[in-house]
Amino acid sequence: MALQAKQTTQQRLMLAPNVTLALEVLHMPLLELQAFLEQQCEENPLLEIEESQNDEAAASAEEPQTNGTEEAPTNGLDEDWMSHWQLAGESEDPTDEDERRDRMMDQRLVTPQSLHESLQLQLGCQSMADEERRLGELLITRLDENGYLDSPLEELSTAAGATPAQLEAVLTIIQQFDPPGVGARDLRECLMIQLEQEGATESLAYRILKDHFPLFAERRLSALAKVTRSSLEQVTHALEALKALNPRPGRIFSGDVSPSVVPDLVVHHREKHYDVELNDHHMPRVTVSRTYYRMLKDPATPDDAKEFLAQKFRKASWLIKAIDERNATLLSIGRCLISLQRDFLEQGSKAITPLTQAQVAHLIGRHPSTVSRAIAGKTIDTPYGIYRLEQLFASNVPQHADNGAISDEKIKAEMQRLIGEEDPHAPLSDEALVKEMAQRSIIVARRTVAKYRTALKILPAHLRKHRL
Image (cartoon, rainbow, N blue to C red):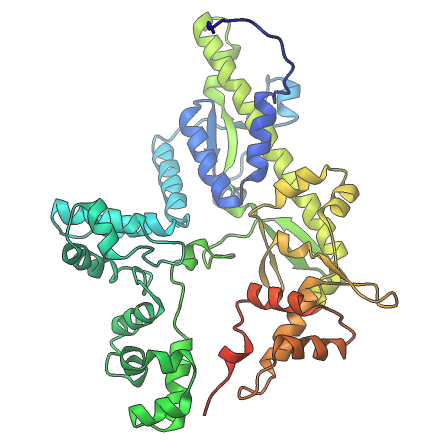
């Protein structure tokens, strides 16, 4: 059969470049948007990053007041332009540009790194041979999100072209990096590394991990006390010390809410109500360069330069409009959420009411897909800490007709309370939890309890039991 070339006509839905950019900006959390804006300012000469409004206010307070005779910097510009954006002021001091670059660098430094980026940076600070550095980079790429090595050294040795002993030596170096416990091959080694970095190798907790880990995993306190020749009180104290360690060190970079996360929205408690505001203190203020804008409007500017500037101006306008739309959408969602989740603001996560993205989309006049894209990765600072916006959209679990529905967050909160109050020597099984919650008018199936317990990272009853 001979190959033939033929033309066909078909209809395809294509998004305009400005729409694609708007969707991309809407999806970005605050810190990611900050880095994106800095990159855009480097690529587009018409874009500049101004100081934050707080910095400008502080600077104006220190400067002497003018007599009001100076011409406003916006005179002569198009009204439609000034009605939507502001132009960046011209800098008379040559050091202003250096200060702006310094601020941008400071913003980059506070941006959280990924686990692998952090380890690569620490590896680069080590004095080692090129071959060792190559092996170190390979090992770092094989760490999972929890910070554990995902393959035995024997398997990696073939791909690395090195012996297991060589890999072991480099892995030992990586295990001294931050966060403590990274580079471990299992939980036992992870906890031991953390104790070693604390200088607690002579402690009872370290001896339990090193010599009696199976008993520790089964929580057999009496057996541990016997083999270590310690009292039950000493063993209990050692286990409490182990519980304070981090079993998933890599999660501080990829967890639900990182300790260094900057919330996108902030809830404020006013006299009689709650209000929500954008956390724009960390948001760079993107404006258009006055110099290049004047060049664009100058009839003496060559046509090829004008064409280039017009293209960059168009992209700059798309970006600024996308930022405005993102902020307006996010603020609308935040205000809608705090009005619908008032009980949560008063009582915490146990009082989150069932709520869907479609309900919020209808109330704010947006499509559900827009709400879904807007809340992805975004966080809000509440009186009970920083929450992901997704957490305020709780699904409902049907109950009896007289009880209506209950949110899954309330079920999880009740489960945590019951497990927290249980007898450690006779913990509640999943079936027992079902019965206990039924007495509190919360009707759930045993498989639902098992699913929520797993989501809360709570062990089953036989592993929670304290054996004497």
